[in-house]
Image (cartoon, rainbow, N blue to C red; front, side, top):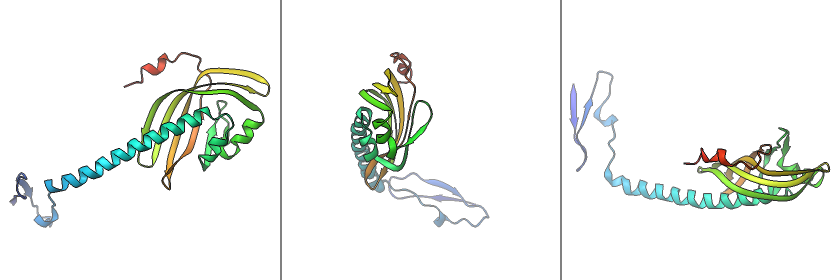
Length: 182
């Protein structure tokens, strides 16, 4: 049979078909417009938190992009974080400062642009364009632009780098990024 259920004031009538499968009218819950302000406040709090998180992450990304010693990376990474070099070889973040004190000497490192930053409640993804000048085993390198993809995780209220991967140098042609902009 069919049952017409009228909700509280200002809610539309809902037709509920009760079949012979044991469903009762009490099985259905109708939402009330009185709940909207509370959920709206919760959503606004989440948006404000996301805005603050995004601002914090932008600052951290800038610091990461300009870190010439690897000390910032070691201090702001998860214990199991890994940095993938352009060669594809991984370096645990805990060993990055040692690596930069040995074979690599960075003389210049800059953030060109944050191409993408997607912030969730406890995870974030970033893609940046950066530049750098360095020597590797005595060989000078000038990378006018390269891409770094990074994953960030919020642990105990603090954002930490969880994973990063650097591309090889892409030259100075940043026009390919223009097709990805909203």
